[in-house]
Amino acid sequence: MKRYSVFAVAREALRYHSGWERAWRSPEPKRHYDVIIVGAGGHGLATAYYLGKNFGITNVAVIEKGWLGGGNTGRNTTIIRSNYLQDPSAAIYEKARSLYETMSQDLNYNVMFSPRGVLMLAQTQHEIRGYKRTAHANALQGVSTEFVSPERVKEIVPIINLDGPRYPVLGALWQERGGTARHDAVAWGYARACSDMGMDIIQQCEVQGVRVVNGRVAGVDTTKGPIDCDKLGMVVAGNASVLAEQAGFRLPMESVALQALVSEPIKPCMDVVVMANTVHGYMSQSDKGEMVIGGGTDGFNNYTQRGSFHHIEETVRALNETFPMVSRLKMLRQWGGIVDVTGDRSPIISKTPVGNTFVNCGWGTGGFKAIPGSGWAMAELMATGHSPLTEEFSVDRFKEGKFIDESVAAGVAH
Image (tube, rainbow, N blue to C red; front, side, top):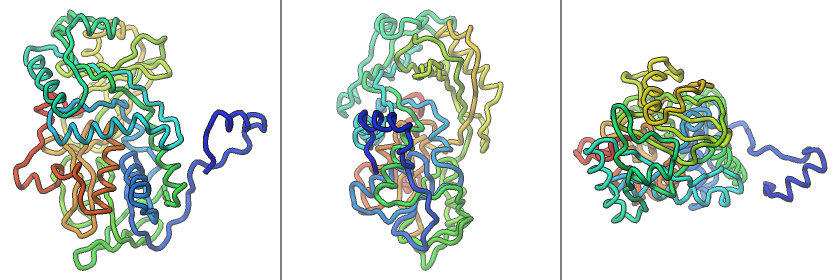
């Protein structure tokens, strides 16, 4: 793999960019792999990458029914933060946030990580108490956050309206090292690194069945034929329950759509991420000038990837209160992604009832921010059978009653 650098760009410019090689190979599947990862999104590719980097396991296939990064990885609002209340959540999200900081150097690929800071607005007395509690918990966890006053909020984001008609801004939980990254670049960077280690990334290859022999996984049947494996990792977000049923077990989760939209591009006016959970809207500005806007999930189970007028109205109404200037903007595009939601709104990273089969799912609306930490933990679990980052996220917690209830603790699961 050729290294990307300013010198490489200059060299290729002189020869009309004719020397660039493909970022990753697209081979036909082999008959057998040590590990098959189903799902070539951020979490699946990160799992494969850390299997190779940390454990030297490179006879790996990453199988994707569509195109690489075409699922939730390419359909999210790119927020990165780790200011969670519960210790297991804070640990894995802080691991992810720290890995994002060096990801461009590690992968030799610019993922455009921008630690611009994340503000979570407190607009009720209940939220003030909740966010102060989270700030104290984060201090014990080693996660750098602070609760700031309305005046400080106005300094950080001058375009905000502190005196909303329904809910005024009473303060905010501020994580200065939170931010955003380019979602596509994260997937592309991991894919390039995996391919360089000799792993096969197989696109347009749908898994149609999981073969189990004597209680252990033997392989998968795909649209490109049967493929054998010693270990199987299921990392397919909203389709996790479908794939689990093919293997003969059920997961305690449901799939719903999460919608987002972007405005027409405008001049830079906002260099932070703002989340307003009470009115349920969040916004940041992309490098192209678009205002990236998101809200809540659909109120019913579905597998759609389209937007709807209902959510435009609901989300934009909330943002208009907090940022009156957005009322004059035009919507550029809207989309939806299929998110997998567990009962406690925390993920599942776990062994399964099928031997040598592992599942990584249930990230709900907060999957992008966790990608490197999730991949690190999943790779460790698959390679060694144990990871300190995954202990609390076992699927068994639902029958044992050991919930990690972030939706209540953090006020929102994003």
